[in-house]
Length: 463
Image 1 (cartoon, rainbow, N blue to C red):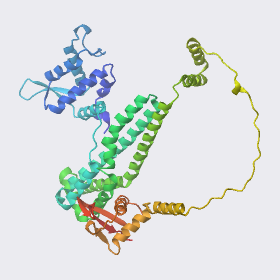
Image 2: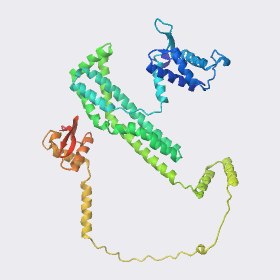
Image 3: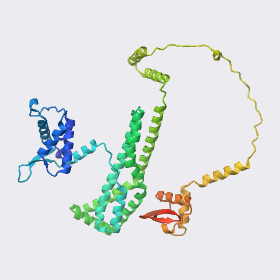
Image 4: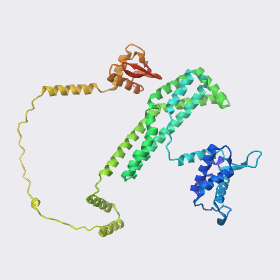
């Protein structure tokens, strides 16, 4: 179905009109009343418009059937309402069995009103825990209430679409801040962007994605849950039948296609989301580095007379002939420049005397055994403290030994190094060469030799 098969041709004309700012404010009044009132009375809407229209300029358009002399504030408000009716935004009707006139927004106009309000709203939307909500909904439905598994799948599909949209919006939002660095040459504007605007974006969106709603932590468990569902014929059959009951498909094949597409979409997204998050990390690092460097450059730029003269000469060198003449005129009017020279003792010139290079025996360096021992010990400690993938694999292999799986109660953490290796093992479990998998069973924590670790199960992968 095409857009203008549903929306009237003049629907968007008010947004390109000479009175578009007034029309936009009037639409926001309509949207606010729609959120809080079931029946929007015409008189209430007109009264609210009168408050908005005070001291506002409103120009008549060609198809307005009214003269300039009769255009009062109330007349402006009614003219705006008639414009909304004429362009297909609202309808006028009466409440049943009464003479009370009300305004009813068209069904296609309601989402447009919501979109316009979000565009005009400068406040940043808080990020919701979409990844954890997807994981917990699917896991709870599988373990406790399988009758609601289809609803959990619908919710997971919706959360995944919103997460994809949020991540892409965040990526392009950071790109916008990078463009602002190039455009701004005022330190105050750069500081305002960095510590006010970008910090809000980082605190409300970027930071939650990386910490409390960690994509890397839940993406593998979500894929495992969905693969278990898709490999179980009984569960799939139940989902197809439930889809028939909820969405009333014509036949079971359409319901099966809908369910399978939802599962495939979520699995495919979580297989590629890691690269998307990595690109966001790169943009975040690039913005932070560029912002700090630009601020440092502007703050340390030469602000002396010599520096300002250098900037004027740079402008003169890069300008066209017409602009060069203008620059020269300004300099002649405002700058009194003359050449000044003086002679003193330091001005005398002495010719450099070349000297021959003399080759002598190098000085002997006496070895210091204490220094050598200390250096060797320090170097070995630095090498041993590196937490490489091989060291992580060896750590997990020693934990498992000849066991197939291991719970948190069986893990022994003897030092900070063991604790760090265990953290890295959880983070890097999805790397290709890691011979194990980790499933975090619940949000509970287990105390192990003074260290608190998650309630989890470490399993050896089948070779």
